[in-house]
Length: 360
Image 1: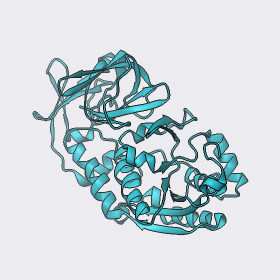
Image 2: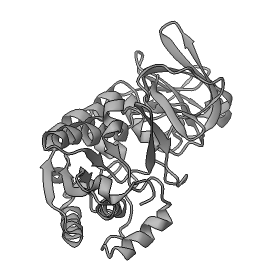
Image 3: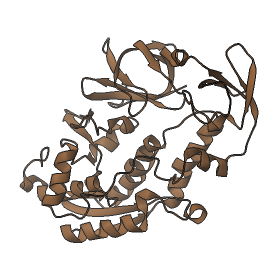
């Protein structure tokens, strides 16, 4: 294992490994076992709408649980199932819906990591005297003195550090990312080497608790609040069904002719959706942030220039952070497309995550 020391130092270290039945978490458990940890596999059951749509949450389906049990048996590690349905619904699903009600476009994976995987699971792990929790995230940690630094995963295409910006020092000091120094191609080879029946499992790329489309999910939980669609000149050109059904930069599904049109802004107090025909109008340099979290626990001495991402697949772009009284502004060197309130802006210097905040 690339970032684990000798077995002698680890043979008495207990680690709770979150396992989902996928290739990444399965190989993570195998690497920990090989490195000499006392590994305990845990499968978490999350909230799902299976009563409504006939399918469970992809992250914790019966099939996924069955695969995880099989992997644990192959690895000869203890295996437990934790039922977090109520907590997941309250902390993640309700947050997702409440944010949409406010006209925002939230990222529930960020909240799930903070509140569930590195929150609730870590609490339970410490109660059973575990030394660490581990997950299959493509990210890395590096301890310097009494601080734990969060780094991007070695595989730039799979890096998941963006979703971890809300973690604190207590959480990171008790966290292991066994696959963070590997490329995805290496993980697939390791799955075969360990003879794990997961190397060909397709990856889930969507929000785990939504099995159809986001708008279908929102229609089931949020009422319609129709309003006007206007262009930049203020001319009414259509009607919308509710601002929560739309996101900045959206082109499809607007239901207006003469396009293409793009969602430019949402005026929540007036219940108005503003659109534009010119995609260039979506590009901006500056944004305001709230709920900032610094990985090292306090506001660092910021470098003059950083890199920032405003969504998961956004290529890190050069920017400057500026403190103005009680607000934090992020100014990019070049215009960025569709800066979206509710999404996370995450700050990087070289490969290190400095922190992040919510766009508003």
